[in-house]
Length: 336
Image (cartoon, rainbow, N blue to C red; front, side):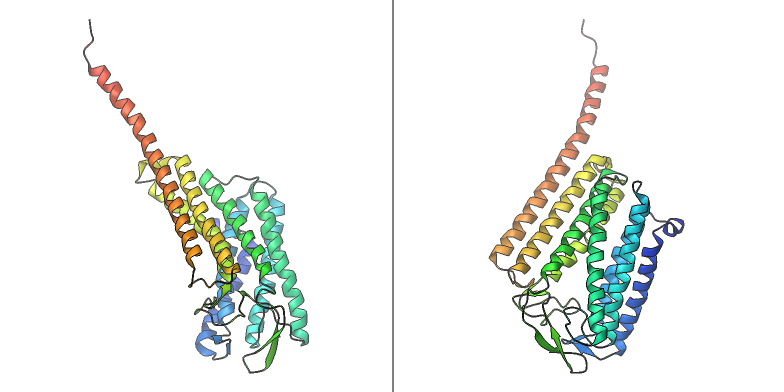
């Protein structure tokens, strides 16, 4: 599945403009990490813009490639892509501006005029992102993209991303429903309501991701689901590449089955991490129940993969055996 420059030029232009802007933000954020010593909750103020910039580059480029390839409702799909691009620019732009101001973008209930107006616009953009992705996911159910494996990968990837965005609605108020005061990058008090954590306030997180190490964190399943489409499409690309060397993978049906196995295993990972977070449990401190669920999903996924591969190899060997038998029958002397 190679991509030429001419094909890139045909991608959804508003989404590619968003991707270009996010790429520029990534460069700025990296420079900020190196040159700006201001911090929020013991992390550089530029970590969040960097994470969101990278995430939107990946997700935006994927949709920019996908939408022009759809045959049905092209105008509607173009409009949804444009809505997603505009909402992404507004939301991540607000995150970047708040970071540059040395304050919080999420859950900030500060009463300064810029923050109050920005929070309204930010919330509207979040809803627009969710609705646009949801409608794209629904419309993908009625369209086929190339071979079966790719169609399954795209449908499941967008669908799982929408589920992860829906899970984000639980973030508000999960840590605490009472305002808590934190300090901005200049030591000024800032009121926050809600958070990403379950059972614990935000903070005490891992490097870069800032996922909590002391309690549940809904950003973990949110991240896993948001980038599922890239994982699934990569699986299709790998299987297609391997088909050049492995004869039993040349069957479209077999590649679709193995792609389905990847989808089921990845969906199980999303469900387990969401369940873990909602129980107030840190990703890096799983209890026995989490380990059992994870082990069961690994075993089931591996078993399904083995069954699919075994069936494919038997199916390939059967015609070869019939051909060999036919050749033996032709060579055998006639019985008189």
